[in-house]
Picture 1 (tube, one colour):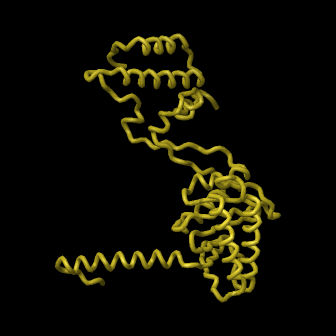
Picture 2 (cartoon, rainbow over the protein chains, first blue to last red):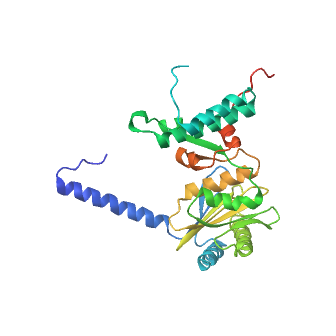
Picture 3 (cartoon, rainbow over the protein chains, first blue to last red):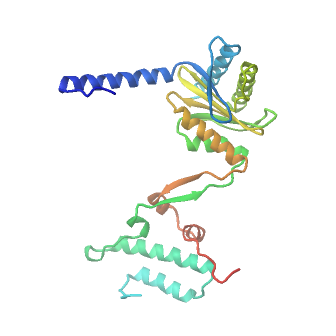
Length: 71
Length: 220
């Protein structure tokens, strides 16, 4: 259980920790990655060293470039 | 019903129309509803502080009215996805043979190229996961710098979307599945329409009938 913070400095530190965790989580979610989902919604990560991973990333980047180029 | 009150000239004319219509069939009921709504709005416009009252029952309640969307066609699937999600920058729909069945992007130019890339994307995913002890993937999410690509497929259709950076994966995948489900004949996606938006539309008999479905009494 998380220890309850006392005092204004501790509370400020708690807020900062929370924000830092959020930023880390957002960065992690935006990390380049390939996820595949089976029909039940179960997600699996295609490992970067796996066969086809690089090609999948290239194709996705190409799609994004195509759309971004048109804007 | 209660006490009668004097109504302004235009509203009185509208009421007169109602009385002259007579009858009790469904069409006339719908017409009555339209005129009553107009009359209420007019009365609200002209109301003085003593006689101010809500123009419509939907203003008294914060009403959320649902509207059944039109039947979804393959050509409209990509557009529907863009309507559902503001994070979608472009979307393409492929048929079972991998041919482009519908596309939507800002300038309508990249459909064929995006469709070809989406087809190759699933080919590569199938190749990468061929040896896995699992069912073939139904959905794919590829996060790349600057955005993300999401794709979902059924035995008949493949729908792929290029999304903005920061788009929520779970929502994107849900929207893809919902559009494909509707395309496959599943229940149509209903969208909520605010009462204000609904009131701003022109009042027609069809809309009134849609708003106030009158059960037919006495039928089998």
